[in-house]
Image (cartoon, rainbow, N blue to C red; front, side, top):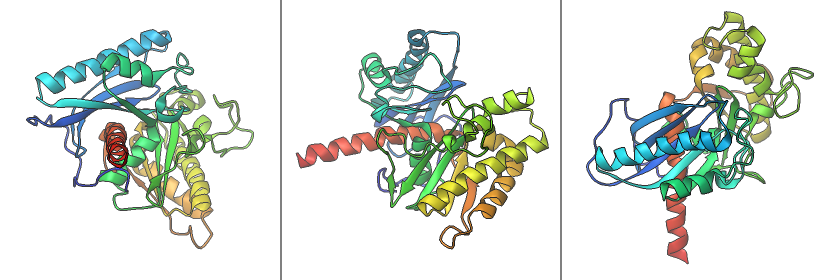
Length: 320
């Protein structure tokens, strides 16, 4: 991909690194269950991380305070423990959002509706803030260092508490009118299916997300039956096929706790459904694969959002 420099060869293991000197970005990944915060180097190394659970009983400002405290903790660790300098904050957030995460309204966080996340984080951290949809951030990460490295056309998907997507065409991450392009979770895969939080019925998110699985089965998605793992994979494959047919893609990279937790059963069912529904010559042969960056991908993606924002700012300043 061209938006983020590809000068690192792999993601780092979970062991904490101790770089001496240099700049880092603070990475923030906001999902319906937890908010993760970490430190990412300019080469894409995740050197520290922590998380706070999303308390759905909290009001909007209370929830933000818990996030701001986690961000502040990582900033202090950057300076005191790693001896590096934080220069920006990158955010990947469940959608919908407005451009740059100026405001966020995650469907699975009821307290945040048009919440001014970018301004609030900028004020609390005293750093510039760059934001994207969480799955778009994952697309940046996987195109930079992961399973789509070197690919100019692909989609990344997150199948977790919710379902999201990010599409890369000709090396560029698609934005759309409001910055929400690629939101594959709201492709209808079961006409007249379950009611979705967006107001429609039968959306992929309403049928295959962690929240949907819990509602359908009465059990947490960490305790799935074989049938539910197959069904979830099949529905994701159907949604992915629609995008591959629409955008002429041959690769879909999938991460998220549900997809990775269901493992081979999910991916085999998803690939079978994709094969069944991509019959046009240009799309035939498209494949689904799991993310290479595993559970580090969302934070590396949020870091990539910040790195991209910094580089774009420097280019603008240079040409001004």
